[in-house]
Length: 415
Image (cartoon, rainbow, N blue to C red; front, side, top):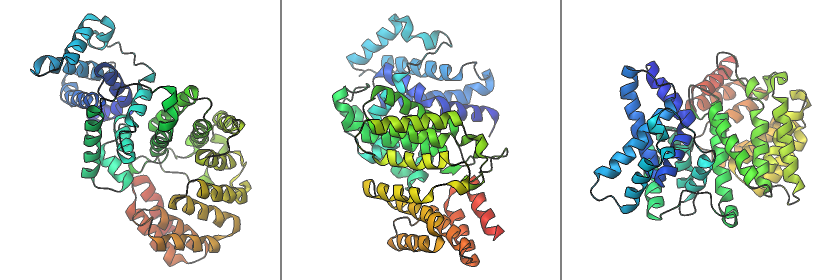
């Protein structure tokens, strides 16, 4: 890959949500906005190697996409009156043409939030909401989304295309909904925001283990939500969870990008200010007095890790209790696997292995690298070296993240 394609990819990763959000505000159509942005990216790949990368590449992409919108509205014989009016408004209003007249580009802060609420509109199913949000806000490719959810690429492509058509057919407005509609959409919005964060926190594929720009975008949107919905404890709890997890970014990688696992991290490099913000956000959630939901329980687990001076000081027994509560509030195989890992630290690997083997027998985590990875750790601690090596090797073959694969293979080799 040459430098220009890398630059285009980087710009898209960082700015795609703002670009698509700006275009959606102009066109009123999220699907059209995403298509126009993609066409502008294709133009950039063709023109930048000749003309050079512009000083403000995101502004360039937005301006080109706006021009394509206007050209398209003019060219098509069957354009409707709404689009004609919008094109006229853009020409008449200098603020609407700013991106075309110059490199000036000032996206409205709430554009990304509008994108999130639009992508999580109830007219869409949960899977479509997640796929569309990751595509237009996270800037992930369909291949990356497919790997995240262990489904064929064609399946994700169909979900995204259908989601755009559904939003268009339902004439969904590009706006943050009225406050009386927020709670209805909140669970989906929070779920999607956290998925974006987790993909940045521990990338499911590629050469990088952490994609901080993606995680920070999820955290930023979460903070905006918390400002909009100060009486919703789970919003504060999600922000707390993301703040506490993000506080470790500075200690999670070696200079060459190799992951550093939790037990080996230099805790002096954890961001203490961010830990403070996370603990304060969790306290705000608790102060609302409506009990802890799934994000608050996860944040409480993260708080246990963040406030332990050393790995050996971690209160594993309390973490086990928190996972048991989480399993009742939001049961899932992943929660059970994490509980087993906590049990192994609190009471030893033998009892934890029984839990993991029960999960394996159920088949819910078949095909993921997570289960053989944890099982390998437990077997290694029990001295069952050959079995542990086999599990680590299996886990390495199942992950699509190169850094994570290397760590798992190193564990297998070290046994």
